[in-house]
Amino acid sequence: MKKIEINPMTRLEGHGKITIFLDEQGNVDNVFMQVVEFMGYEKFLIGMPIEEVPRTVSTICGV
Amino acid sequence: MSKPKLAYYLAGGCGGCDIAVVDLSETLVDVALAVDIVFWAPTVADAKYKDLEAMPDGSIDVGLISGNIRNSEHEHIAHVMRKKCKTLIAFGICATNGGIKGLVNLYTTQQLLEKAYIDTLSTDNPNKELPQTSITLDGKYELTLPSLMYARPLNQVVNVDYYIGGCPPHYEHVKKAFTALLSGQLPPPGSWITMGKAVCEVCGRNPVLQGKPKKFATTVKRTIEGVPSEDGCLLEEGYLCLGPVTQGDCGSKCPAANVPCRGCGGPIPGVKDYSLRAISAIASMLENEELVEQIPDPIHLFYRYTLPSSFPYKRLKS
Image 1 (cartoon, one colour):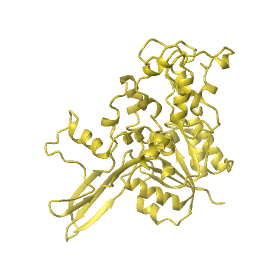
Image 2 (image 1 turned 120 degrees about the horizontal axis):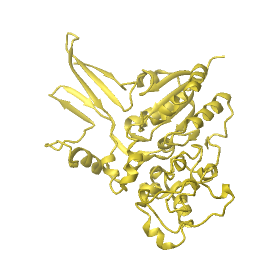
Image 3 (image 1 turned 90 degrees about the horizontal axis):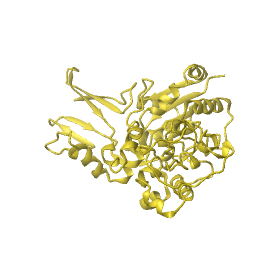
């Protein structure tokens, strides 16, 4: 099965990848979009004073 | 003469530094006309990693990388950028020191993944599945993901020529940096591109600049307690502000908006470990030792932008 990878997806913030699988006839069999990064704000914010959170989580996406 | 070639890669960041470049507005037109942008992914140009990999080594004059190095894909592209670019710049505090996203280093990858994918109240994941670096779906679709690593600033992965701080760098500072780059008026390699002054030195609240004496802080307050004065030093009033040790290329924008500095500009010249210097600076400005106990959440305050580049952390890792 032929595989085409489009990496990275562009003109957006965040890292994504598209993988296209082609069958024997060259037709599209299946397509997957993956978000390839992971941040972890859910965990590392624990313990932070609430008033500090807005200026911190604004860095989840700066666009 | 051909135009200098420019490449930009966003690694483990948020795109805010990319936006800081776009914030050059009219100046951006001049910059865009003066350079040949050969790669800017994933945010601005429709370039793919294989396009960058296919370029001859050393063929790009200036490369900028924003974001920290957090997974195997970031690490790989950072190495590719280093090979292709004559001059490589760590752009923004994530690339120079690890940034807010560097706080992931407080936990193990397993702890972070379990919280995000299993333990949060809004997550529906009955089979408790976590991301895998490779998986075969329905027996035939092979998919891969980069492997996660602890966060590192760029200089722990490749050699870095220049550093520009900020979260994001203020566009006025970006303008100065680009002007210096395009005119070739750069400091020695390995330097920060900065005017070299601390936030306090450009802060309208600094009593010394107003001809008044500097006083110790007699209380420690959270920013939700009370209202700061209009033009007094936030630190003297008990609002812990990291202005004394932070590069002031931002023009002291946060204190001007009644918000204490959190250190995104990076260390003032001569400081090797930002967080230790910040702890020392704050401690020396408190009236008595008991106040130290009242500092709320010291780790997220002093290490907010610089955990992966701090001495104690690096020592732990080694």
